[in-house]
Length: 542
Picture 1 (cartoon, rainbow, N blue to C red):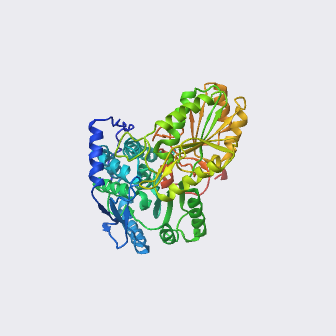
Picture 2 (picture 1 turned 90 degrees about the horizontal axis):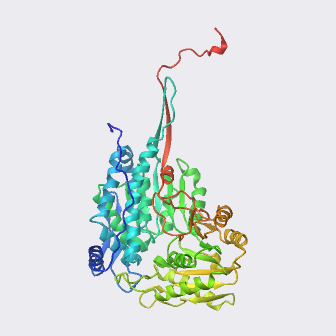
Picture 3 (picture 1 turned 90 degrees about the vertical axis):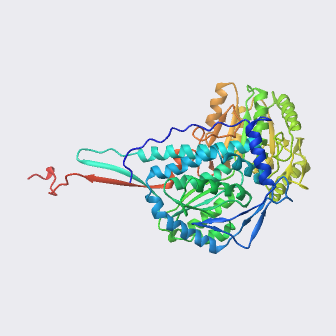
């Protein structure tokens, strides 16, 4: 039991290493990359104190060289799902009763391990299996995850410190209990840090987790589990299973101890899961928490007063870093006619200068998209634009999957602000631009607001402060993360907590105390020191 009121180390955002050619850090991560690329692994499921191997082994293929095999992972079924639930519930009693400072210590240690001996391995695994260049991997897999772990410890202590007022003769206090049951975490391929945080954030508050990572992210998921184990996370607190979604859902969403869903993925899947939870609501001991971050159709809109070079750079970085495979990636842009020629010239120049290829070559800015399914979806939109008389491709438009799933960054210009590629989520290196009359700022802002069902991120560019204020007003509900004179990507833990509303999710802001609030069930305790002994109040008289 705690015998003190403890202050945790004050966190600060992890510095991003530059990985300049010839630097110590680039040599270290490339050596790690080559070692892992040229050897094979067999990745188990983690259930309780067991590493579970099955006869159903599936290959791990780098997206940039899909004929190469770096290992296998073990696929399970209903048996493993049931065992994971049992292991989680078995671990729950001791874990939820562990003093908060000891839980905090585990995740603080994980952060320091990742900043040191695990850094190159985590980055290399992300580069290999998710085809991120070294700088994108560093920002995601190392720095953001370190920040999540350190700042969430601070937020946890802030949460615990939130206490009600007391009056004379009464002591009021608040317990922030873990949820009653287990949390189901479903995570995506595109951000290693998000995958770890969807498990770690609820676990930090004393919850136990069933974790289903995306099949295409299992390689870095293994490193995450190794990291948590090295930090001293007890068996059964986070159980990693690799099974298909319907198999897991059929058991988990009917289990009485299911208490929460922590989800990042597609809007369609999230809606389906929400419906399933609603259908089974009578089965649960408590109303489940549902936290989800889903899709986006993120925008950039520039005012006639904006600086063309700033706008074009925001498009080049915001749309094409990590091949546009970010929920926050710019996918539609609105450029005023007075600066369009300059913006057009610069973004075409940028796209033509991009190098594309394996992450092993740090000079490649563009790598492969994650899978053949993704490749086919993205290229179908490019082909649609090629065949349309409402659109023109001014840069890119080529693709090739013979060795890796490579899609050239593509810029589409349309005369129709409601063109298909302006409205639908593509999740790849494709941006569509609508050129509007420079004097139709407010009108165009209203188009931006009503074009998409999503409301995740958006950016405006202007030097005219009245124009900025008007954009903030009209686009109030169009983006949960709103950027002024900056690209709509690159949210930083503690600085720009991440999440959107409308069809983009529940807006529970990962990277802030708001997210942690979802993983506790508060209990108010009132203690009266000298209870009354007579029911009569003074107003009743003697």
